[in-house]
Image 1 (tube, rainbow, N blue to C red):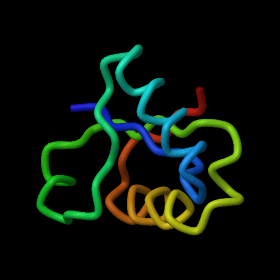
Image 2 (image 1 turned 135 degrees about the vertical axis):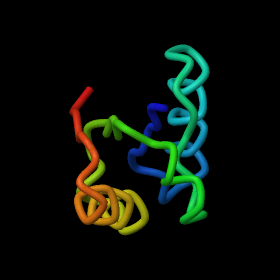
Image 3 (image 1 turned 180 degrees about the horizontal axis):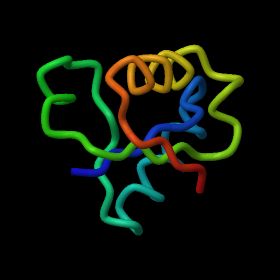
Image 4 (image 1 turned 120 degrees about the vertical axis):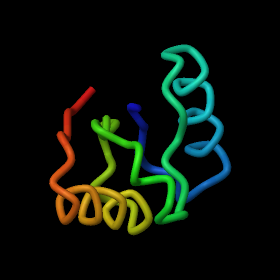
Length: 71
């Protein structure tokens, strides 16, 4: 399963990320660790490094040795 992360510090960023998620058919990564069991690839949207939540998503994905790809 693929998941998506990106900047979501503001309501506008969250809305943009949700819209992109819907257009691509890739669900957003949630904070639930059990969801990571079935994840194989994390896609990250530009600007992820400026959002603490998405930076944490990437760190966790790297810890689990998931494939990380930039969009």
